[in-house]
Length: 216
Image 1: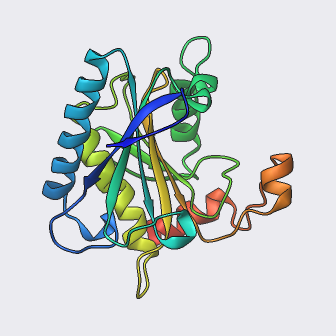
Image 2 (image 1 turned 45 degrees about the vertical axis):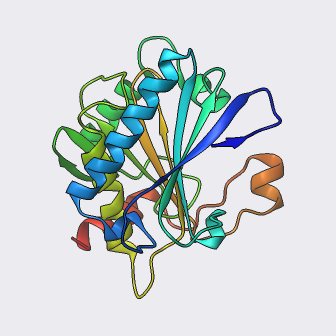
């Protein structure tokens, strides 16, 4: 537990993703990721009991802001839903609408399995940005599909890996229809991205999805 001076959240907790020294969730199998998911689930329950919201994320690699080489999760107890997740809410379910459109188009879908879909979303911010979501509307992100969702995210990293794991950020949003967002850090965000909100993605999501499909 790390106390924080900002009133928006109380403290941060760390989950060590595996006892052996690994640098990426790409090195973990489904059974190990199910244990990570269970740790997140237990801490989410504890946060809810105290009227808090748990924000779960993973940073791996120096380029993604990780301060430790050993793969780990960061769990932050928030006073309320974070602003970015809150903005994703809308009339009906925007994510259900998005998934229907993406599945009908198919060009950005990488894989479907275990009741989940993996895709490279339209207008992604960076090369190989990926989204993992349950096919059916499901509000509880800490339910039984979380371990499989983490494994699908790890699959993206495995398909991108060469000699070393790729730096990345991953986070869970419970914004009506839960999902994981994975951002491999293959480029550096500069003034245009950070200051104006215009993201220059050098690989179209359709091309990125096709490459990930070929890398199975």
